[in-house]
Length: 152
Image 1 (tube, rainbow, N blue to C red):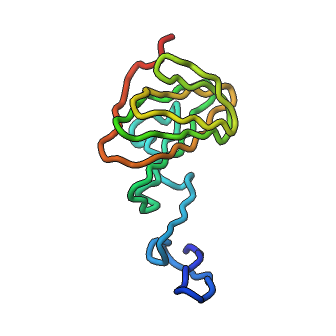
Image 2: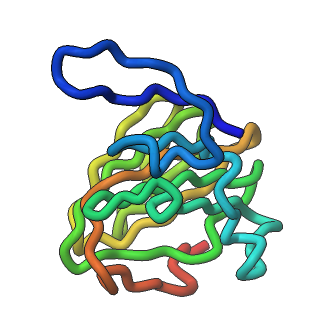
């Protein structure tokens, strides 16, 4: 059972309500990102990372959102780029490096990394892991994966 705020008609005060789901209550949704399905488990990448995409859970129509955890000393399983969507990646915790096309940059807590659509990107965690929140506009079939992106 969830407890949430019900948005009232104009001139009335908000009130707490109990529901089995947040969606029918109002025009907003609240989900804990750690409770969204980890797609890295589903697709066999859980040794190196977690990858959670809550857009559907939140009912978001035009906003893309992802929560990534890259395990200590690991790299994301693959890189990607977009055809249309610009992304902003925010380091919530940990440190590491991001490869943006041919550039490799050190990153740490609260760094915000804006990435243009055509730029291929992938993250590598330092010894304390790397936790990222990624957001931008959602475009269907906009992402392209890139294998073997890191050149050692």
